[in-house]
Image 1 (cartoon, rainbow, N blue to C red):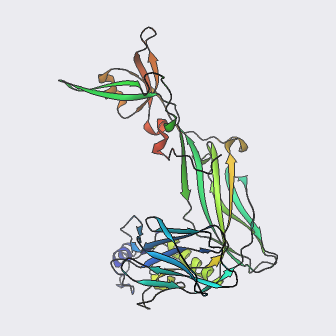
Image 2: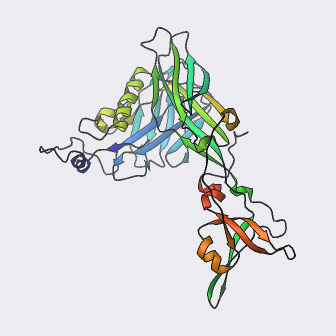
Image 3: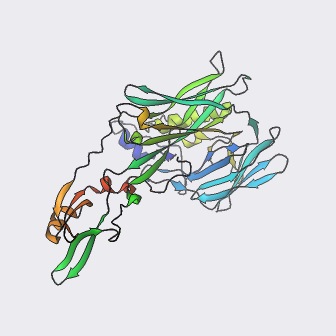
Length: 387
């Protein structure tokens, strides 16, 4: 999640018709304020914490806080350090914490500043009863279902991640070749494997994973029963996500009332239009504090719970009349340098037409690159959880 601070310039753009000058009360350091995302998993699964910095609206990329030292500390003086697995992303497995103790995060950034979250109780998190789906208005709508008969948990948060399989519009065993002559570059098409003439399936099977950026929360405070049934993801009608096989991974967290209210403010801030009435960073303080400067805003709220997880798969065959169409068209090109330069360099070769006597390629078909090489739309590394 990228956190932005509405600077005066942006405010002026939004309110160009206003006569009265508005000066923002927030003075942001050049390095931005620290943003802490995640939760302490009291169970055997992974505890994932992401550190980043707030940035101006003109900066499009997330500024991650790298090379920090993060520890989960117990009030019984236990401590476990997280490992940075990628820029700004820290993890540890199998904490298996004592439900009768309180825990916090201890963060030391590379500039030596120390940040502590408040000690928090372990919050009971009931299992996910189900994640199901149904066809609604042509789309596929997914719902999460859970309940707590003990009524110990009244506030929830969900994090989701989508993965779907991609197939190229065309198979290909061909490649472009180039050589050089006195007249310049000479282009031709040949087989990737001149002996076996095998298909390059590394360009045909791919997968794409996209974590949700939505803030998904729910509460049973106003309900007569502690039962949750909420929409958490949607596949638009005829989307490419369900062209082959789709998977939704859901993490459920039980959260405190304080974090629920923090997330509601955060959601309002990130979905706002940048008005002067939107929440400022000082309004987004959670339960994390800078030890050396108590007045420094820190954006984040850390709770402790046993995280619950569930993954579902949906096959295209389960959804009748799913009419995804990539819109790929081939053209026929003669296998000589002039024709290739005119028609083919911005396309990828798919199917050859060969001389029956010599086996030489006399012409070939070609299509837009994204229709032939699935790596332009995803990764050809198969996820470990994929069937």
